[in-house]
Image (tube, rainbow, N blue to C red; front, side):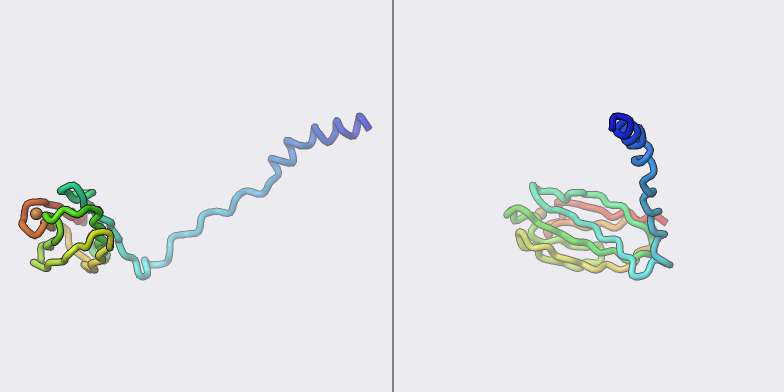
Length: 122
Ligand SMILES: [Cu+2]
């Protein structure tokens, strides 16, 4: 019996090593089907967090603004297109921007005081 225990103990490390390797990670989805760059921007304390986001050109962009304070200054956000959205506290506002070409696109609060930008890399 002593010999058998010894053999089992001796085999344990070998058994652990013999575990099958984890499966290889799946390859990336074919041809970026329905790919969207979703960016969450939190709005509080008189600023956008983050105030500067980076995305890739040509891939649709979805902005998700979430205002978490009651400050009136950032109640509205105005996009570079002039489009204005009201941000109710605690309720995400999703804006489908679509694909952008390379460049920098700004957004501001309703008074043009608080600024944020989307930097689109080629
Ligand atoms: Cu403001």
